[in-house]
Each structure stands twice: as C-alpha cells, then as structure tokens.
Image (tube, rainbow, N blue to C red; front, side, top):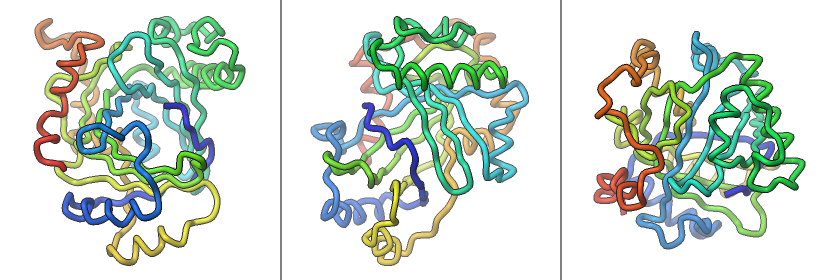
Length: 279
C-alpha cells in the first residue's frame, strides 16, 4: 500500500451513513474502487496507526490552536502479519497543502528505531530504495528532535476510490474511527476499550494534487456538504480529555493488554459490529 500522494490538498466532511451510500453511487461514475477494497466486506479495509507525540501533547495542541504550519508523526500499517510493512509517516501541513513523507520499514525494526536508532537499509523491506530510507530517516530525526513517543492507537475502516493509472485524485470514506491511549511501540490490531471518536458519522475526504476537479465541486453542491476538520488523533483526545490521553495502559492488569499481531480470525472480529451495519 505505497501509492503515495507526496503533496496534496485534503478536504474533509462529516456525513451520515445514508448520505455516504448515496455518494458512493455518484463517485463510482468517476473513480473505481481501489484494489485494496475490492473483494472486502463493505468494500473496506482496516487502516491502523500508532501516533507519536510529546509529553505535553504538542502536535495535538497545534491542531486545536489551528496552526497552519504543523506536523504529525505516525506509524501506518494495515494488517497483523509480522512480515508486512509499517510505514513511518511524517505528515506536514504548510498553509493549505499537505506534504507526506513515508518509508516502509520492517515490523521487527520498529522497537529499535523508536528507541533512537537511525534507520539503515537493513531495516527496510526494500533496502535498495534510497527514497524510502530518506523518508524513514527524516521521520526519526523529527521524532528525536521533538522527543516524541507513542501516544495513541487509531483504527478505522476505509473505503477508497482512485484511478489505478493516476493517483492525482482520491476519495475515501472512513468509518468506525476508534482510538486508545498507549505508551508502547507494539503494533496491535485491536485496543482494549477503544473510544469511538465520531460515533456513527462517516468521514469523507476529497484529495487532489493539482487542480480541484470539477466533479468534486458538483459532488459538494449536489449533496450539500460543509467542509469541517476531522483530525482523527486530535479529535479522539478532544472528545475524551487530556487525562484519558495521558494514562498509561501498561499499569493496568496484564489481562487487559492485547496480544501483538493478532491472528487473522481475531483481527476480523475487530470490525464485526460495523460490518453488520454498513453495506
């Protein structure tokens, strides 16, 4: 899952499930479902992230304060398999433009890299890729400069549409956004007692690299959409409070700690509820 729009614009909207179903039919006239959602229940796939922040939650507060120039650090992964990649992502906002650098790293290298070791080719799934290495090193330099550490797991189901031959335009529906505090570098597929950030609301994102597509404008007008912020990491903290975000689950009972890299059968159950209601 490395089709990356390095620099793009992102517009976000909160919509109901009913409106999302209507939008789906409109969107399919312009873009096909991406290859990762094809054949999946509800055309969606799990998207998992481990967010890093400072002890003072600086990246959270930069969002709340509305800073136009800010950044976030996260590890993005899509399944529980130990041999699949985890992407070290540095996502920056400069004015209205989103700039994303990400490098695909081996999961068995995560602990040492988050512990302060600088990425080397042997830590990558594609050791020959100089661009991936540079992106992973940029992430780690920012992490060390900020003294950022793991703070939050975020998971959701993504339904995505994109032209397979040109990723300049992309549209996604994100459902069942969940977050849970963590202080561990473990890449779990399920968190204990996660907070459902937006409730039943679906987050629609319109993404484009250059000119705003005319059919995006038509979509917004026809379905009477109002642009809103939807920062998943920050919204989770805002709706539950800083004390919740600062708690350390490692101090809780061992029985409450979820095993790392859950089996596929257990992993499917994470989103069982939403698959019964979303079609």
